[in-house]
Image (cartoon, rainbow, N blue to C red; front, top):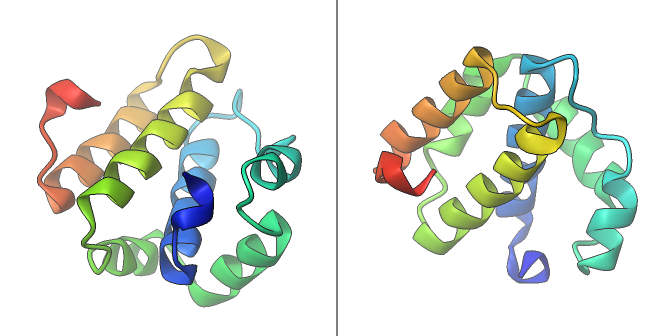
Length: 113
């Protein structure tokens, strides 16, 4: 699953997770290192650092996300991000904006998110 993502898709996933977490102070990236290792993702911290250096702001991340064109990757990123967003039981209004953006750029049916 996560191990099948290429380098750019992994950076996109980490960027979306950071965006989700920053949208809700109740969410946390704590424990992500173990989760990603357990799923053969590789070193989460390495991808996080690369993502953090690559994007100065959310607009830069948004532009990058538009280049990710694999629908299976889209679904996987949204699933993992949704799991993080729901870790505190509900998805906040700010988190919904993140998912709405992803739906629009990737042409995803809102019913699937």
